[in-house]
Image (cartoon, rainbow over all chains, first blue to last red; front, side, top):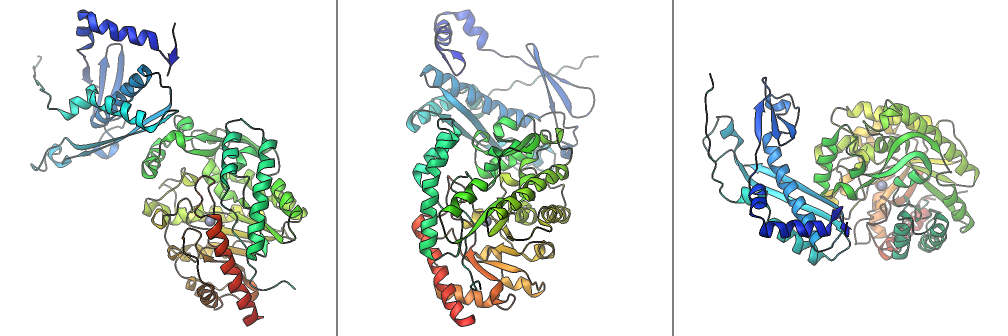
Length: 176
Length: 386
Ligand SMILES: [Zn+2]
């Protein structure tokens, strides 16, 4: 094992990136992702199955749910925070910078939630604006931290998903 | 006989940069407590000199050895640990309250350190005896020592999900803090301390915090579930239990609306009126209150609540750069004379000048001039009302 920074083996991280350069099959594998969300059978509770993991999505009591977990829009902003954090650690580690603490605080504002409730046709029920603020503790200068952050934001898969128009292909089947 | 209109301070003095460095090095374990105390001794001497030169009659040690007015107890009491929110959030029951607070304060969880009860508590060493002894040795003035009040300590350190494993209810923990503080007050008295002040700033947070979206981690565990009247009753009972029957030392309670930044808007606002029924039942000699800041409202609140107690009248605002004029101080004191006899009025700033080590609200220079202005006003008042 080589040098470990931020709990990551820098050499294996670099060889992983090298691998992506030449191994077409590997790239295909990490280029596509799957999830299956199942209604739990009662009320606003759903379970998402992802590889060998599962997690619960629910609604808070003020929205008529049992509050068994975060709701879907909270997962969206959490996913953004997690994506930025992943990218930040990756990019810092590539540069050999160790990070003591990293936290991303996210706040998302829905354009008009009344559309979701069927009470309005004004605007849309999606996020209008998302603020993501990262706090970093590290022994390095601010310029470098900003540079890593910019690269992270620019190359973030979730960030790009949210900032661009994604083609969503909804389909439905009735099973009898 | 003691002079009337004695000038005193609320406690803290801005710390020199080299002391802040030493404080940091101590926290990181790079210097021993002994090494730190030797450095702090020098800073205390400077704080003493400033106060003496400004004509302060009852001086403090400037709280130079503390990181702030309450966290320092973590070093003195077993079972109380200084932890970052990041370290304990996974165990806290009301995670949402902490998250909300972090967002309001615009800080990450890893940067906020707060003392929390993580075991049964037990006094390790006296809380402020070392401070008092050193101060006493180096001044001929009367001396004042501030201690965090029992309600503040309980409120800030009892966190559901963590502390309730040891103290099922915060009231049970309060009893223990109260015993420790009671013992400490007597110890300070027996070692020549003239004035012990209990700091209870969170009382204002109980009243004015929720409406204002200004909260601190001192009150992190306070949720909307609690009724302010019940909280104030609880605070009053535990304070009285702490001080009841102790004689031979002047006992004061200091209540303010926050002193964590220079910004007036970032602090709580609201007058003492709703607090007065509780305040008047406190078995202390003196209320040390803010009045220089407009946020504290009018002193006329005492019209409906006459009292024979003393008042430590806040006559300068530690947060502003402008030095209050002695004439203005005199005018205000004369207003207070409608409700308090001259021998019951003490003059002091609204709060300390360096409540939090890392973010003092003023420079030593301006702080000094403000104190000087108070003593000038006091000597004119003494002439007039002796
Ligand atoms: Zn204060």
